[in-house]
Image (cartoon, rainbow over all chains, first blue to last red; front, side, top):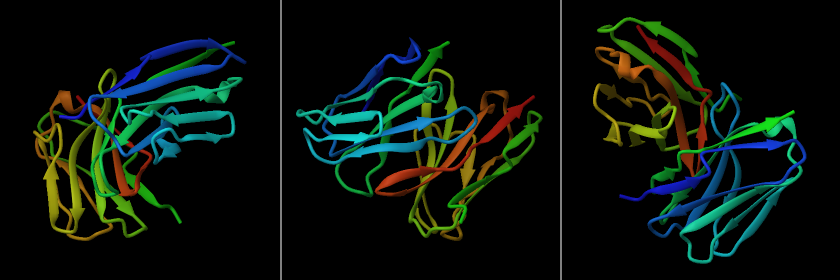
Length: 112
Length: 109
């Protein structure tokens, strides 16, 4: 079945640093999604990407839909303490009703 | 306008007991999902439902039962809880993207 490989699994960075994480798939997706999960909460959608090559920003966050449609990355610039959490990528194959496949998450830690 | 709610938020039970986790949405999204989240496994799909009275198994359905008599509710039942079912359970709806509830942390002793 379809699988998403998300890396890295964990990141430890200093406040103020930029962060990059990515997701690769064994098959093509038509939609890429990035979620953030704060401790004790459910995942919340950060960015949705619908077109190959698309680059979308949400504040300090930028995500890109890879040209091959098999990968996506998320960048966070100038990290702050509230960026701590788990970031999930997710992909959807064809249309709005297809199941969404989730990566295993990248846990972001920010060192004081 | 709560969107999607889950209850209880925390539950401790004993091995062998039946437990039901509730999920309610105030939208009318057709699709609803149950995931469990465990360290090292990310989000794993237990069951999903495409509409009222239509349910289907996900990746890890064993030991769980679902029903969907009304569009807005999608309860998940553990018929005889086991320690391996200790986890955080998330309900979600889908309309294009997925929207998650706050989660239920279940501990089986």
